[in-house]
Image (cartoon, rainbow, N blue to C red):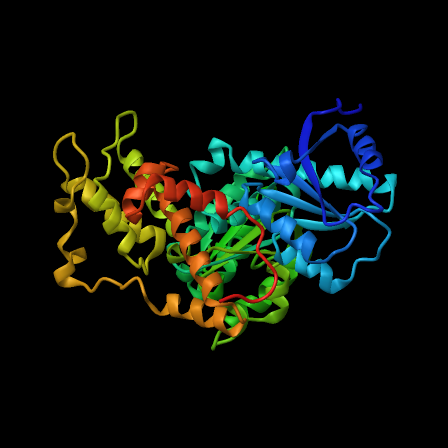
Length: 465
């Protein structure tokens, strides 16, 4: 059954010289496959979820067009080499570094099916990321968090891969594992079995994983099914997998690879089918007490790295509001006073999202009345006299400047990038409210609007300042 024309809208623009690019032929081939191709207005991409940059040469013009599209609000940009000119490895990496979601050649009509399929997959993933099921489970709107959510959705919905989730304590690894299980597309999906590897007693580990027969050892008074049997048809989540002792890691190799095992006390091989998800706050291959590389490469078919909260500060206030709504189901959650919002944004959160949740709950418990939360609800342990607030010009700020200087970025461009980033973050914290963002930055509304419009311009070549 063919897809009705025009059900997938994508803007396009040509980068640099359009010589040799047959836009009409490309548009016809894509329209026949249900894609509505629209030119970008005025040479600047309009805000849209999906876009294409057609280029004849994979040079700076193509990279600048991709960057401009991303800065203008386009979530996904496909860079299409619309002529027969070959793509080099270096040019392809430059386009990907500029923000392209993928770089594909256009050798003719045969490329259309793959191109449209890729765009449809992107739209399906983004629709799931925007769904209440995902948004209410993994809260956040920062760019790095949205990137993680797309990986989570793609791994869960479109693959059966074993997934390794990496991240500091408190970043939400178990929530991600549960969401992967929920989004799994298997129609007959079984249950989720969770096993915390920090609680596994070495002497009983075989029984925990493999199960045992009645009478297999002292006190084995009845048959017991282990985690591999219980997860058959479903998902097995091994939390803190880095804590597994080396002898047990060796025992797990066969079942992870071949999905076969024997209960303790039995000579019968049994089959099991499950998706394996593992999580750890350690770098497994660098662990001082060792982690088997052969097991690592079996459990890490798809790796997800969750960023710490300090790298996704745009999500602090949305998360705080989410936790307040959790505590007030069916009722209006208290708002946050401006000084409370500012306070929450100053903290470093070594405990990540878990620490933020605990802090917000403590503040809500201390809050009295129907008004917004005030600084008086902040627990004493978090108040300035008992802790040192981080200066905004910290080591991370200096590191970013050192990197820019090392790359030859001039002072003028550093200043512009700093200002643009400050405006973007202030607007994000203010929920897009220009007046509120301007007040926080100490500038006029007009200055914010001009700066936001100017930030969409493509960067110039060469050095400045």
